[in-house]
Amino acid sequence: MNYNLAKEIAIASIQQSAQLCQQVRENIPKAIEKEDKSPVTVADFGSQALICKALKEAFPNIPIVGEEDATALRKPESVDTINKITGYVKNIIPSATSDEVLNWIDYGNGKVGDCFWTLDPIDGTKGFLRQDQYAIALALIVDGEVKLGLLGCPALKLSQGETGWLFVAERGKGAYRMPLAGGEMIKQKVVDKEDVSRFRFVESVEASHGNQALQNTIAQSVGITTESVRVDSQAKYGIVSSGEAALYLRLPSPKYPNYRENIWDHAAGAIVVEEAGGKVTDMYGKPLDFATASKMNDNRGVVVTNGVIHDTVIQAIRQENN
Ligand SMILES: Nc1ncnc2c1ncn2[C@@H]1O[C@H](COP(=O)(O)O)[C@@H](OP(=O)(O)O)[C@H]1O
Ligand SMILES: [Mg+2]
Ligand SMILES: [Mg+2]
Ligand SMILES: [Mg+2]
Image 1 (cartoon, rainbow, N blue to C red):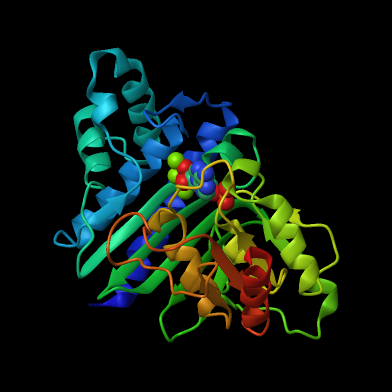
Image 2: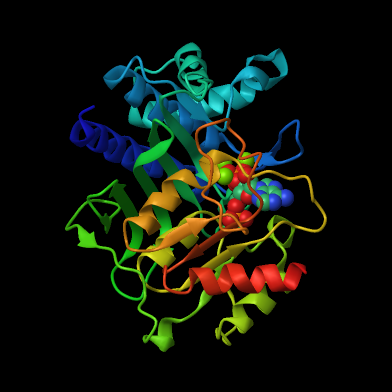
């Protein structure tokens, strides 16, 4: 597999998708409710259409396991929505028709296998709707291992540089970030233990996506006394990978004890942190399973660290659970 070509196609399609998402955001999009009651917007669909089209044209035989699906859009009552999505896609691909856009979205109905992409066209839809953080997350998984991961974070501002970053990581070749609009690649490195000033922890904004009380207890028990930084989406992985936080905790919400994490919510972020020297496991220290299904049925929670504190965090979680 030519990972350089894959990276190039992925970067270009994420940049296109970020343009569409930002255009939608300027027009204050409305949430559409999905069957599972979670929100989706015309940007989620438009982003999935653009990225799936680009990937399928370059790699026709590699399935794409994407979050969204066009079934609901094919219903007669959804004609306004699909026309709106196609309008935004046409700003990027003028020749696009609604039928093509529906088919491009449904390229994302691929199944996990020995080589597949997983795509979250907008991770953090609630953040996107709130005009806060969101991420366009794409990963390539080969023989059960994440080989490539890309995170487009159009609204992310770090301690230096402009707003809008694109994180790129290839297994064994390090993690980098570049300005989303293009520019120099900056090597990523997680925070050292000594750098206490950046020894912060990040967690979701949405209380229902984690266990904020327990997350704060665990963070304090490993010496992080500052308030948590609440951020939507896998931008949290970009922040840990940039060395601007030491820990991202995502413990199961007591309200949804049977919830299982989607692979598209973590695959890209995981390699972006691992290739910057960090570590990503579930709350028991088990590796995340990106190979078996689109949900990580045998994992509970997610722990993301700078590596050096990982075992201490897992130990602290074990103690709290006894
Ligand atoms: N009860 C729950 N526990 C954990 N994650 C959840 C959840 N309900 C939804 N999510 C996931 O949380 C993701 C957003 O993560 P974060 O909280 O870090 O912003 C959502 O992705 P989408 O926004 O792509 O649907 C969704 O998949
Ligand atoms: Mg969603
Ligand atoms: Mg998501
Ligand atoms: Mg999503």
